[in-house]
Image (tube, rainbow, N blue to C red; front, side, top):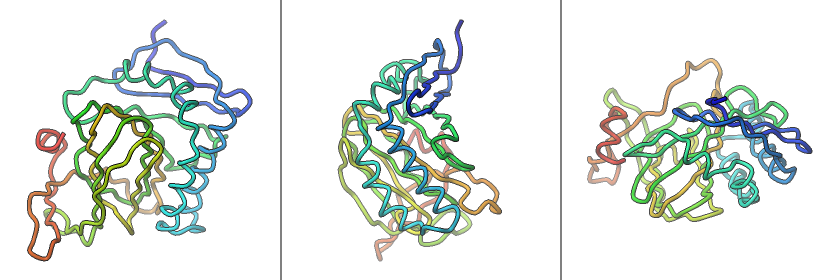
Length: 243
């Protein structure tokens, strides 16, 4: 029986990861999630919960999440998520990347606003530049090489944002990047070779703020002082221009 779900059920770790990528059609596939992988993912999610509770600052989360994700057993992740099967089942895209959300179980410590996704890129494709709201997010390189650029979000204005460049570097397998409201909020991943990113997010940091989707931006206007006037643009325009 065909289903839109790909189930990964833990035995020793007691964990389930349910892939729900658009246009995904596959038999339910049950696999063990190893304790080593589950432990690291649980620790990463706990950091997000600490930010949401106020026990950890957003920049403190950014300082901590990289070392945690560096301990992800990548061979186990590839095998237990069956990444190549997920790539084949994911919605095909001509620009940008294919995104497969993972439903994260509560026994890994996932609370409200926690999310994990897998991003699949072909060489030369990008996830267009954008800003985030009310969240902290990290991307771990599982496969490939990426150029990643970051900007601080200085302020918002009626037609977009004022940004200040902070990083422009190449990251490879086992390395990660992160964003928060406080630091490196805008980013742009450009895939230099066929690649995969694991996205770990804690959203709804302030539950009183209405949810707001990430906002795509245009980076063509740079001022003499080096800051960018990043105009807000739609998804289709961003994919055409940058994807």
